[in-house]
Length: 218
Length: 218
Image 1 (cartoon, chains in turn cyan, orange):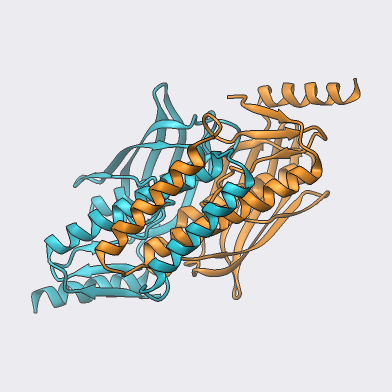
Image 2 (image 1 turned 90 degrees about the horizontal axis):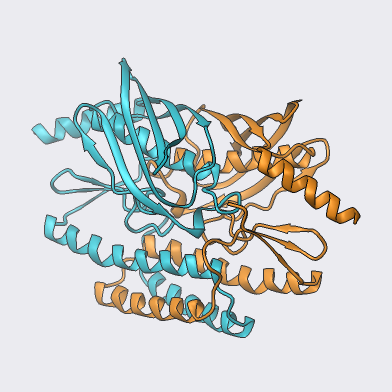
């Protein structure tokens, strides 16, 4: 479970990796969208497919084993570039660029296209849940009381249209290892989905954080 | 909102589209995974990116406007090939292949790799929510009382490891336009996340279903 890795990358090297791998992921997001919407002839699709497979083989010529995990740089900064919602390397992620405040809030403006559809023209209800889980978790972390999702309750007021959207969350209470957060997604007309979450810091993470702090001071 | 489209495709033509476009989406899923995990030199990543962009342009030479929506075939079968969880054309979707029973259950075995990561080595809590929303909604539909998500509550028992997983849901009660569903995700050791959902058939969908039934009998 604890596949944290550490790398001796300088801030400049990290910025360069985010730039190059992030641009590749962004192009892959466009491909994902085009695969859903394309109406080119089947022969053309089949040729594109064989080209995609060749590109994948080139990327796999050298790759990490398993998932990306969290990489901790020499400066102690954690990077989750594979994260499904915010990971710059993950073409599934819109990606959300969240803004944090120390009083325990997180917010993001983002765009959801064809790949996030559930009912026709609307954001998949589960995609709203996916994004709100991340925003709630980041609000908890922003306020200094991070955790893993313990409970999440979503209330859907109306359909969320595909397009430009906003999400924000805030800590409402901290009780020991439990952090209570509220969040919502909104379109231009206001909130569409509300979330209430309880985030709990598991023991293995508490021990890991304590160890990291200790190493920082050694 | 109602971008349902109808197409005069025969069952054989639909099967062929699922095969060709589905294979392209599957190759794109592999690319998404490789983009996260690749450690090839930056120059190689940049060259792959330019190739990906060229392939996207070829697919966009002819494409539908906006999202995929739901296509209703001449036989009245609805296809949601763009759906984020089950869409065969959507590289974000694992995709889940759900099995329905008429007494209102839906289940699926599936595999989640690097693209679905939240905490290191674990499924993103929001991805579990995304999948459970879909499974709950399909259970409601399987039992003849479909709806859009009204409320969804997720209880996380423990981290869900990336890998082979199972999800299943069942209707527990139907009350007018509200369908109550329970579901869970499990790994080999048992359930990791539980879900309780209320699904509500909105008025526009009720009217549309009524119209479709009427047309069927005309």
